[in-house]
Length: 457
Image (cartoon, rainbow, N blue to C red):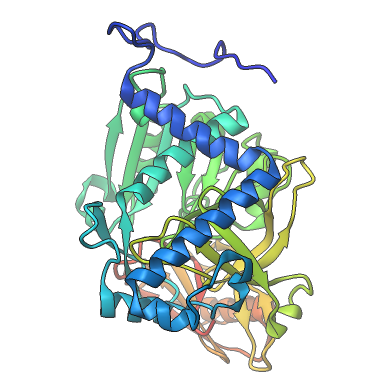
């Protein structure tokens, strides 16, 4: 093992000017926190698992002391990580009930907490509490991934995020730029620019002009927006605009679209996360759609489910225990997603790996006979039939699928018939398909804007 900072873009003023000090406290603390995370996730497996079990014991003990809701679920005063599987599965309804009954379990602990909520894209939104530590972890863990993979720290970062208020901006989007993307490390290292673009029904031509103003670098974007943009531009645009890596968030990415970006020389590196527990995994650099579990943040289980076995006999329901969820505990929480879990990755990573991940809000369709199948109609296929600004597909019943096309007042009979045939090609002839033309899709307060989700899973 060799420690060497010669490849890091340290600033000329990186080191402290104070007596008997090497690095100023803020960047030093951030570097130390990153080292903790990297040591846990890439170090000795036995040490990691011992640490995780200890963290689960700590969380269980705290929840048992502070919460009548959790004491009732434990049904014993001596529940520990070793028999975690004896604990009932936690549902969204359970979380909602605990928060309504007790609020934040950190109340009175002199630890800053904030109220947070899910977008509601998978059903009724739920509110919960997160602590200051949870918020700081997000920044530390995101930065740590750059060091784990050896990513270029000097590249720009461009984040596109849907936001209804942005529709009032010129061309349907707003732009904010920070000159340094490294946050607490900015005093220590030289980083690229960080550009935030919030959009709502954006003018695609104007949006492309904005993206070309600065080299894109790391492009963090919803796959749904890519589907919309690629109705009028080619993937080569992203390469010309300096995209070094595509980081899809808040939705599943069409495998064919992924292949197209990779073929254009733009690697794709997704993340697997949820609003409730934060980061769950980072996509392996060598194995697409395989996620190295963020073991510094969550403990993951996959449990069998007969309905899922028809999709993949090795797959099951994904449960997560958020190791630092002291404000609102998430212990054996059912994400509504399915996947497979392996003990290690073929790339050499000696830690748990999630693969074949599909979710209730991503790419699954439930049939009336109980089967679950993959459902992934592409925006490009829809656009070949009818022009539109945006689309949304929902499974609203076991026998019904609704397709909404935004930016259209009406559809011709031929367009409507062709769209129904396309959806049935993907879903099956047993589904009734309703095609709705609307001036604009009502996304509500959801930040995910998923092209498809099931309301019955």
